[in-house]
Image 1: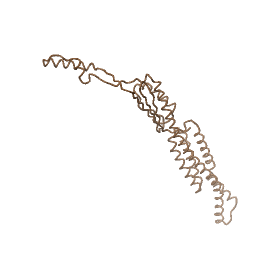
Image 2: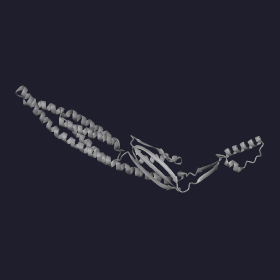
Image 3: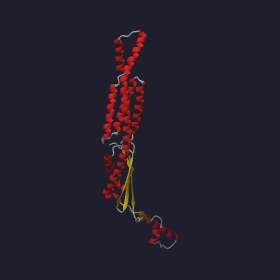
Image 4: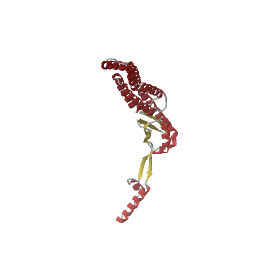
Length: 290
């Protein structure tokens, strides 16, 4: 199964009177990388998160984003900075003695000083409900995979259409290669007859054999068809195909270069140009495959 390296998945779930939302974005990368924003209380599960995603995804750069929003009226926690309160008290009492004032500083006065009373939003410890958090992660990952498969189908159809074009061009070359030898023999016979007046059949045959040997592309054509069949087979499997397809595309390009060099024919060269162009487009698409 062909999957794109790009994709996006989002899921959310109710946890402890709030909503946890997890987003996973995947982009192209040579290897698998996992990074992103994870709540501090869930950092103890960071390795477990990465391990889970590595089982699902083979290649790509994954960016995680966890966000938690509490529903209803936000509760506040109230704390007192006792050290700061004591410093305020000691300061005011000392200042009163220095100025000869009555020491009538009370608790209300101390609490009114800036920073003594601290208000903060109550935070939920999501690590205590990790199983629920993990279910949200799994849903987000599944949605990511769905988008990767959907985009992968587009890549698959494009590659298959280009393989069909290469196969057609290969057939044209194969048919043309049979005629090239006969045409060379006919032209050679005409040139030698013009130069020598008469020609020995043995000499003509020898020249034709030498040309045929030097221009023989049957092995290259056979390997090309084998590579194309291999590509079709790989595209049907569920294994990691991105790197393998890139390697086979390089081999196809190498065989095509040899065919162009040995073909010694204008029409074969035209088909070679078509094949090379399609191979390059395949290699571009392969870079997007997981």
